[in-house]
Image 1: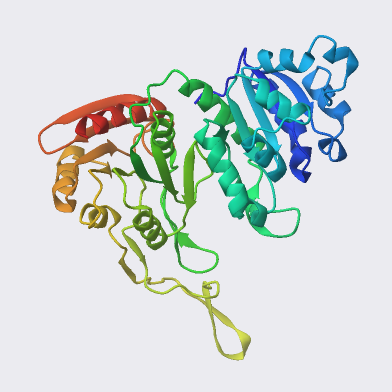
Image 2: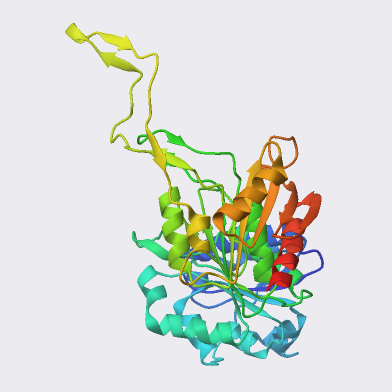
Length: 411
């Protein structure tokens, strides 16, 4: 997805939490993406970050009060509210979420949010217990019901020393979410009301605390499908193996490491209307995991060591995620698998389609430069019981929508 906000006018409302220090980088990232940025601050935000710093990176004066006589002589807060293409509240504290949910307007930021007709996005940041409190969750639900975009929060270490949900989404990911939201403005919500579970990326099967058995899947195809489905109005749960990709806008992400964890997370996410298994799940995992690093030498008498030239690892089968979803009591209406093959692609894919009881399978040839694993491009042959559709070659972001077109037709 192109990171461009060229010509977009973003009104950034900074609220009073420790994460406010990241607003300086956020402004810089927004401007790098081409956006015009105007900053408004609450009084408490000024305790964490200075208006002079935000003015330096935005290039325009920062607004911080309804009682600025020079600005308000011309009803400046209404002018700002009309200027914005998007209002971005980041960080959004528990307090501002509560005030926005209840329509309060007792300072510049809350007044701007009530006066604007532009879409609003909030980026929550707070202690994990505050985020999980029923009052906060109720306020967020009310905002979502009004069409407010909620970006994050992420799980992670917090300034209070605790760990959990409530960490501010990183600025590059916030920009990516805004780009996706602008792109979605012109996209038909033809998957509205549908719940999709998508798996993506590799699995890592640990041998010891240092080593693992893995594969080269980047997760880009699955993440592209998740992003496209969310843009088209679906409720999306993305079960992601260990990859370094930002969470697509509007997607609930569950991170896993092993095949067993991926299986458990997918089963926990059911029921769903559609399951798309784009993850490259390990077929085998070590029977035992050493609690200590496996050495390449063995200790011999009198403190000596002897090199070990060979090592045997016993592997056992992992759970078959695709087959188990297809046979589940709450089976999705459409179950789509992926088959990555190096040769005789369609033959092996058709066998997998029948053997696992799938509705469709997307087959691609890997091992070729510029296509498949670790690439931004791909080429798919989407097969069902009667037909085969060739998609691509092309960007995975484009193929994702083409695949979803076939899935929607299947529905």
